[in-house]
Length: 420
Ligand code: AMP
Image (cartoon, rainbow, N blue to C red):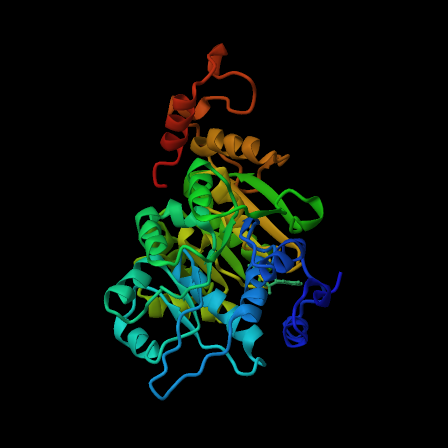
């Protein structure tokens, strides 16, 4: 199915081809025509599925050219709300790239917190056509009268589950109250827990549903492996693997900012170009680390879950879970950083005696068939420190026939992953 069969203009089809998109991905096939027909959308799609272009292309087609200057103010027609600064920049880049040849070109503004608000306010003078924003800064700009949302015709919530995970539900309710009732809403989420479903229900009217998560042909090509290792040997093992297998670009996930700093520091001392990436770094520093990573000036980035979403490094061959993620969903998001845009990827998880039960839980939730292996020279010797870590999550019952309750499982998960 070509892009042109979805109702997109010739210029936008050409823009998609120029971006290297030969044919629409399943989520694009399901979403683009429906958006152009003005329908609301409820999309379950992982990052890596092509979901950004799935809303960016029809949005660009729908935005009407506005006269700017001579006192005329551009009014915001489309609003894209995203959970993180990184995703805001990325979505902004996709929109700007696809809009490059549109004439007249829409004005696209990207705003997020953690940096001075003044340049963003200056950038919004004269109005704008499309805004990509994180919720807090969006509301700050509204409060400063730098933005008005009363003319928005299309709202996109991107990674809605993450928006809620990050505690943005009040901000989203405020944004919703500022938008016209008559509008189109497009809702994207990788997961649909009760909170996400409730939010979707309040925002959407008779939505077209698009689900691509489970279609086997859309699953990225990611090989997964798990290595049993002692807690204290993980950095050495990481170094060994990077060097032995000559991993070019490696994204390493840890549980805390402190761990990100320490592990990156140790790797640097061992001669590897490594940088930490976490929420306590300035926005400038975070952007620089990502730019250096993409340009191969940095070989290893040691990140907290902040980077688990939104980060799009097309050629990212390896993701390492140095610390296991808190939940099975986070596991999906982390490993989804690799194997993007049709490339093969590798996801390696380090499993210690204390996190083994948690690993089994993740495996079970994800339906993974991954055998726990050991690497020669790094065979584990530690035993689990807490009895909870021994709770058997993989079978029908728990230790000594006691079937663990939901609470037991949550407690065990918290216990074995205290830094999370
Ligand atoms: P996303 O799910 O939006 O984060 O996109 C994941 C990756 O897929 C990005 O690197 C896009 O450039 C790429 N992509 C998006 N649409 C297509 C397409 N139709 N064909 C090939 N690659 C695509």
